[in-house]
Amino acid sequence: MTTWTNTGAGVRPRVRDSFDELRRLYDQLGEIWYVDSSKGASGDGKSWQNAFTNLIEGVAATSDRDIIMMAPGDYDEGAVVPITTQITIIGAGNFNQHRTMVYSSSATHDLMTINAHHVTIDGVGFSQLKDTKDAIKVSTTASFHKSLIQNCRFDGYGAGEYGVHTGSTYDSPDIVVENCRFHSWQTAAIYANATRGVFRNNLVVMVAAKKGIHYVPTGGDRGGGFVLDNDIIGVNSTDTGIAMGAVNAGNLTVSGNRVVGCGTANITQFANGQYRGTENYASSTAGGAIIDIDS
Image (cartoon, rainbow, N blue to C red; front, side, top):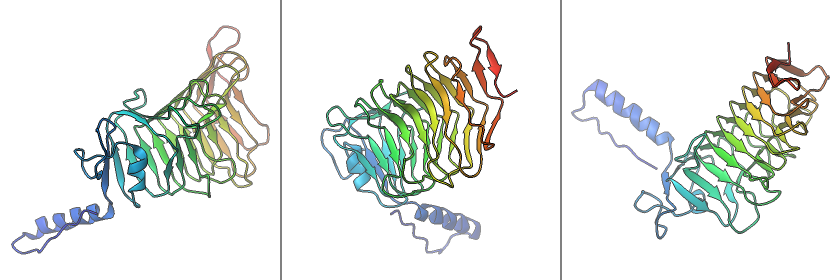
């Protein structure tokens, strides 16, 4: 961990106060680790010059509050990347670019699992080439809170099952998936099963007979979710842009979404009094116009 030392001698009070505040902020952080797939051999991961060559090594080195910086490049991980510490991973990509890409060319496995609180994944691309496997699966061993997945790109190539899977058994309370791009997932781009989960400002491009965002609250208290301002593009009338299971407690708010190319199955609604929809727009089956389906 970075340690700051201040003797206070000869330092003006205001400067000393600023130094103490900076030291406090740095001491709240952990180590910064570096990963670069272009390196010929792994180093100790403590600088770009001595970076690890794969993400699994980087994650294994972390403790809570650490940060992993990933250089642009392709990261062929031979096994699932298991996150079990409270960390932040920052790649060089964004919503549209695979500048930092995690994939697996050989083994059939999920690309990443998150089993820790307060994990952030930012700017990383994921390409899942294997049937029935996910890119990121959250809360596989217990319920974990407040994951943030943002500015990432997920490609399923019609083979990968889910881009982000929040768990069919355990809860992932307060997860946020935002500003991400999803392409061609075999079942759905997002499997949402989280108390107060927020899924917003994502772009989903589907394949035939699939779902864009599948909100499936399997627990009795997993309401309070939000599906907001997503753009979802289907292939034909067999697609469902947003599919919603029955919310057993609390409400599910679905608002500001734009769904096109899915025929009459743009948004599957459940008349249980717990779905709140406003200003969701879908393509007209008659002429292709965008209409407000909640008006």
